[in-house]
Structure formats: structure tokens, C-alpha cells
Image (cartoon, rainbow, N blue to C red; front, top):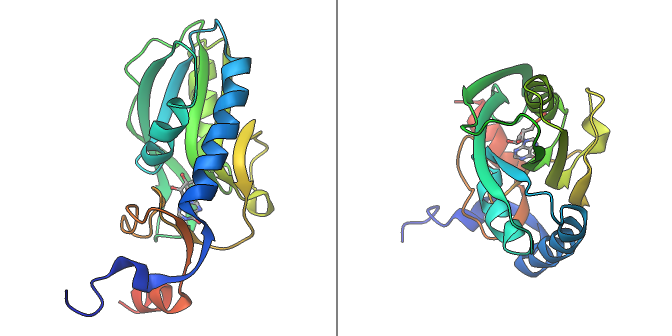
Length: 189
Ligand code: IMP
């Protein structure tokens, strides 16, 4: 393998190990099993980042559910939200009267979550809640509630387990903080 091809070279330090993440999925899955019992929720994964988390989360939920996906984007330059959210791929299901659970990788400014919640509520969803792997409350710009989350993170940019930088590094199996020089190198391009 050529030097530099190893993706873990770009990680400054590990924030959450694979074991930590599995613990979070187990705890959240147990809570959601209780809260959604008998509700046949529509579980909507936010593409692309949340796919990794969603597959582990729902396998810890002992609940009959339906699954769908939505793709919205707001990130302009890779690590700062532009604040302008666009709908790239819509959900297929009719959400009218449904208990919808949005699964997100991370809630940062809250623009993306607010956009998805407003859209689903306008269409007549009975309830819309959010389960995110990570929550960055210090960065919030919108008044949104993250009903369930795995852990809070400070104001730092993290990658791995679905979280990307410029659509890369999603396949790192743990969550780590990017080396500052990786961001600097890309800014100078
Ligand atoms: P928000 O609209 O600012 O809340 O941004 C939500 C989206 O921004 C997430 O779904 C992620 O795709 C992305 N994002 C926010 N913070 C990070 C991070 O630390 N690493 C990777 N992606 C992030």
C-alpha cells in the first residue's frame, strides 16, 4: 500500500471506539423499543451519513417498522453548513398519520433537521422525532429537539462510521477527530 493510502492516517485521535458505538446503539434501541411499541413507525434515514448508524440501530429495535430514506444537503465547503437546505431525494412513503422517526448521523446547526421535520409535519405526519448518533448543541442555530442521541460532542469536526469530510472517510469503523492539517490541505486546494 502506498504511503498515505491508509485512511486512519488522517485521524488525530479516536473519540468513540466501535465498542462505544455498539453500546450507544444498544441503549438507544432499548429505549426506542419501549417508546415505539405497537406504533409501526416509519423510520427515515438521512442519506448518506446515517446509513451506517441506522443499520446497527434498527437491529437493536424489537419493533415492527417500515423504513425509508431522505437525502437533503446543506454543507457547502465540507465542514461548514451553508444554512441553505435542499431536498435531493424525497421519501417514497405517504407520511400522513404516521409516527416518523428521523435517523441522523449528527445534528450540528439544526438546519437540516428543521427542514426535514417541517416537511414531514406539513405532510400530516402524526409525530416526528429524531434519533441522532451525535449531538453538537453548542453549534445550534435552529430551535430543534434531538429526542434521542448517542453522545454529545464539542465544537470539533469528526469523521468515521458514516460521517464524512468531502464525502470521504465514512468507512472508518470508529469516530475520530480529523487532523487539522487535513482540513488545511484541502482549504488550500
Ligand atoms: P446541520 O444542518 O448543521 O445540523 O448539519 C447536519 C449535517 O452536517 C449532518 O447530517 C452531517 O452530514 C454534517 N455534519 C455536521 N457536523 C459534522 C461533523 O463533525 N462531521 C461530519 N459531518 C458533519
